[in-house]
Image (tube, rainbow, N blue to C red; front, top):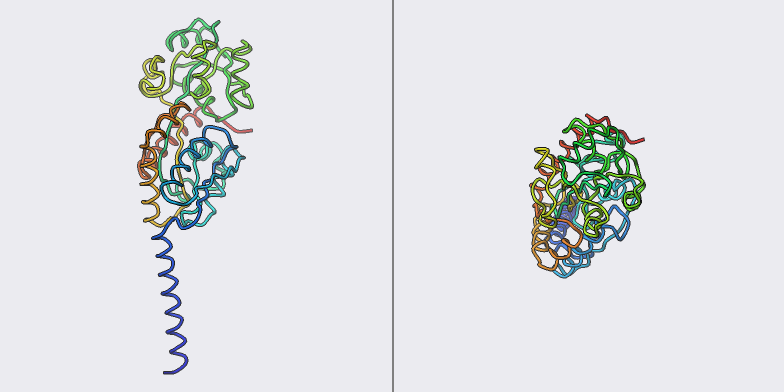
Length: 325
């Protein structure tokens, strides 16, 4: 047989072997450790929830799911690194509403990824509301009373963690819906604004549940209302804002994502495993300790929920003219 034909046959055999090898690797996923990027520093809620799930995934799949913290840019840096990784199921991430729902609207000209093209949405893990907090000096026990007080005291300052954060957006949502004028005051972190609230230097905030509810339970601050669409199971005694302001909802979410173009079989296996982990009793209990409510949304439902969330944030950000300095 001519040598050129033999060479071509050899090349075809090699190509077929590569395809077979790739298919076998996909079938065996995971055959090596998986990196889970958390785009925030260690110790925060996102990090802890990622580690709770990663531990269970490691047990179930026989490979280590290793959490790697890549903080910076309000969650953007870590997610950008994930989108640039190979779409082979060995680098995934835990994302928050800030990184994939708020920042794509707030800094759309600066963000280095496209949330519609650069991600595979795997699993909506959990969400948590914010709580409207007031100091004991504010004569309001309900949202209706708070609105009345704010109308009588225009331009009242309220604490935020900076422009475009959920604390800021929450205030702008209420101002728009109830015809109020309030003044956002930026703090570097929620713990600093909570200190000033307790000390009486500022009287109002709409902070995330995990931070706010501890102060309400301790009697240091009053929880006037909660931003879940209905009663929140972890704090049923606090009336939803929507009971007074119809349609008011703010539920920042946490979920699992991968790079675009991941193989369908790996996406299915990973999503199925994440769903299964979410149903483990000890996982449910652990997440509740952080004040989050499981949403348990498979990939397509998670993507749809995020699209709605982005649209809601876009309306608020554009109406209020929120800008990042």
